[in-house]
Length: 305
Image 1 (cartoon, rainbow, N blue to C red):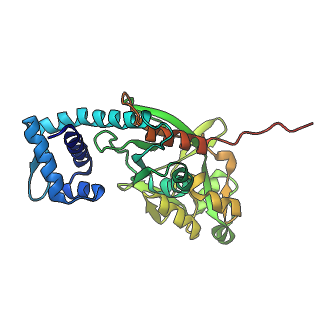
Image 2: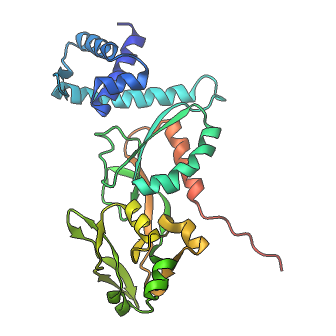
Image 3: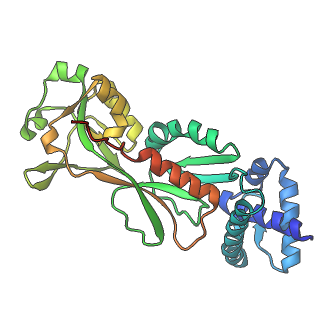
């Protein structure tokens, strides 16, 4: 194998570990599954190690393959960074950025920002995956993830994007039929939209005076998906506690009303996270900076006397 052949085969192997199938890598690269398997087989012969166990149902990465992947991933990141930093410096960053976020946040807050990013960086591709769970960035080959709430993983580097208000909301239609609650005790007389996962109901966090209290909502609809919470509010199914961004347009238009604002708890931080201790490719850095600027609060200019 030539040096360039080895580099290409290493890149294919890295993507095989991250995608989990030869066919998925082939679709990404625009080549057939047999060609991917052939190049990785040539890499194995060159290394004298079996990296992949091939079965009819799945691809199993060997112990040697996992060890090789860690070094290969760093090599590819360094190579991409080198490509971006030398030669024609006027050339736009290029390559794929793999980002993970919650489904509703991705649709409402990230996707609307992409047209301008692609206009500035036409050679960059975004591969966005959505999940309510916290993905393993290194194990699943994800460059960036957006996390809501307090961070606990010390293996990640974090950049704060914003803080989200958590508000009680209901549609005008629901409130016209059921009345507007004016104090905490009146919530017991209302139907609530309950956020729940694995049959576990999540209490609402509310601020009463200087203390934060938990309130357990009651209602006919339980869901673990923010999109369903949003849809339920708009359908007039009840009162929900949700991040303001989830219903920002409807709140601005008056279709949805914020309730009991004095009970609003502390804001929830939103961070952009990526693996610590790794070189960040230029294409990823420009996307980090772009999102940080997009989420930054507008600068207020002092009024003239």
